[in-house]
Every structure is written in C-alpha cells, then in structure tokens.
Image (spheres, helix red, strand yellow):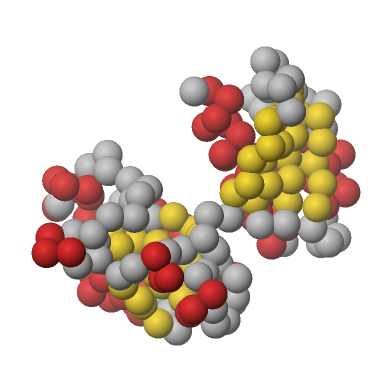
Length: 188
C-alpha cells in the first residue's frame, strides 16, 4: 500500500497549497470525463491508501465533469498505473504550480448560530450544532433527493443513514460529501 511504503504520507493530508522543494508543486489534479469516473477513482485511490480530495476544477483546466481529484504529485505514476489497471484513465493529470491552477473547494459553509449548513456542490445539509439533528436537506435536481431528505431529516447525524448507502445519483454523492463535512465539523 502506498501509505505503508511512504512514511511521509502517513497521517498527512493534502489540504493546503504548498510548493515542494525548489518551489515545485507537490500536488496534482486528475481531470476526468464524467462524475462517475471521479467517484470510482476516489473510491479506488482511498482504498489503496492515498490521501486525496475531490475538488472543483480551476477554470483554466475545466474539461469533462465539474469535479477533479487532488493527489500527491510524487505518486502520479503509481496512481495512474492503478487507475489504468481499472480502466479509469483521466483525461489529464496537471501539477498545481500556481494560484490559477488551484482546485476550488466544493464546500460552502453557513453558520446560523444554532445551525450549521454545509453545501457540497449542489446539495445542502443543515444540522442543529448542539444535538447533530438534521433539520434540512435540499438542493440538486436528482430524483432521489426527496427520498434522501425524508430518510435523514428529523434524525441525528449518528442515527441517519449515510447518503452513499441510500442515494444512487450525483446528488446522493454530493450529499455524502456534505454529510462527512458536517460530521467532521460538529465533532471538532
């Protein structure tokens, strides 16, 4: 597994834009044709131990779908080999070498005092901060959004089903990202 082989990745997350040695990029972006490929690649890369993030593409390289995967650039060849073995070849892999190529965070947060709303792509999840009670699910335009909302609203984060377990669309995927971000923020 890459994490076991490379100690520098253990516990490390690709969170901040930072140049590597000699001012060179230490992160890259994988651009895919469609969202389904991004979701499959994310699952595969995380399963293999890589610390990656799904982000919005910078305008300068927007192509294919509206999501990209940020990855540790030193692992590019190994990552591409794993992806190609599963027939998930990206359209391109681009090093993040400046602010214009910086991927865009797909999360937007809104703190309403008692409530916290996290938007991931086109889906919004609102919870009561103190109790973790889900008070609203909205956004998207996928056919499973009403089902997702009915299954989650009125339950706590601990009780509610995970959107990835019950959703079948891009909206369900985006809601899962919002759900994970809310859990992370509410547990901190």
